[in-house]
Image (cartoon, rainbow, N blue to C red):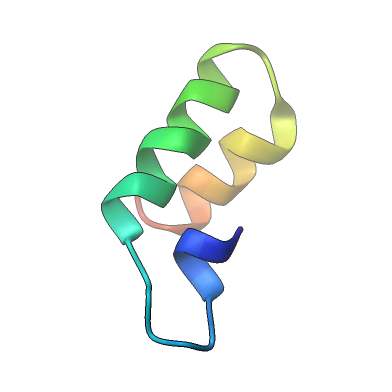
Length: 40
């Protein structure tokens, strides 16, 4: 996700976390895994 790993220093970890949470809440296992990796 560009909000988490952008090489142009436009990182927005809070936005990335919110989008991963939305995906996880919707049943997306990858979103849940990414959220866990971020330390949520």
